[in-house]
Image (tube, rainbow, N blue to C red):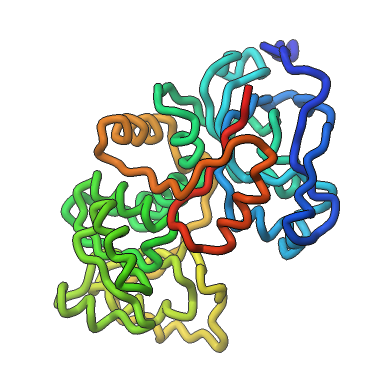
Length: 340
C-alpha cells in the first residue's frame, strides 16, 4: 500500500513566530525567525490567518502549565487559516478554509502564534464563509467549549431552561448565544450589575448578579429549578449551583474561573437527590463541521453574536493581547489577525 501523496507545499523555508524560551512576563514572548514546520504523514500544515488569545497561553508563558509543556515553545491552542499541505486522502485541499484547536497544540507541540502550524488531520475542521478572519478567529476554542458543554455535557434541548454561571466569560457569552439559537431560556450571571447589559446583548433572558449564593435567586424565577446549569466559575460555588437545578436536571462542570478545580473532603451527598453532575473537557471532534457551518451562517445572518473584545494585527501585538486579557477589563475574545 503506497503512502498518501502530499498536496500543496508552497510554504517558504522560514517564518516569523512568537517563541517562549523560558517562563516569564510579557517580555518572554519573543518574535523570532524559525523554520516553517515540516508536515508529518497524517498531519496538515495550515497557513495561519488569525488566532484567539487564551488564558491557557498566558499560563504557558508564565511557566504554570503542567509537565506537558516544555520550552522552547510556540504557544497557541487554536487558529484559523488555509490548508497549505495535507495528505491526498485527507479530504482537505490547499487553500481550503479550516479551523483547529486543542489536542496538545501550543503545549506538547508548537501552536498557532506563527504564520504556519502543523496539526493532526483529525483536529482540523473545514468550513466555508465570507466572514472576516477577525470574526472567525474568535470562534474555535470558544465555540467548541461552549457547544460541547451544551451538547455533549448537558444534552440541552429546545424549550429547556439553562443557567450559565460565569456568564461574562467568553465561553459563557458564546454558550448563551448558542443556547438562545437552540430555543432555550437562559439565565446567566455576572458579579457586577454594571455588566448585566453585556448579558442582555447576547440574548440572555435573566441576567443575575452573583454574590456567591445564587440558588435562592434562581428558585424565585424557576421554583422547581432550571433544567440545566453550566458551571464555569468552579468548585468554590458548585454546591450552590447544584441547588439551582430541578430533580433529574443536570450540571456540567466545564471551567474554574475562580481557580478552584477540586473540593476538599468531597462527599457525594453534597449532590442533591436526583440531580445529575457531569463534566466537559472535549476536543476539536466535539465541534462537527456541520455544526460550525450552522454557527457561521447564524453569525452571518445576525442570529448569533460573537463576543470579540479587541482585534490585534500582527505578531508584534501578541504581548498587548495577552496583557489586555490578563487585565480582564474588556469582555469577550481577544483575536490576533496576521498579514499575508
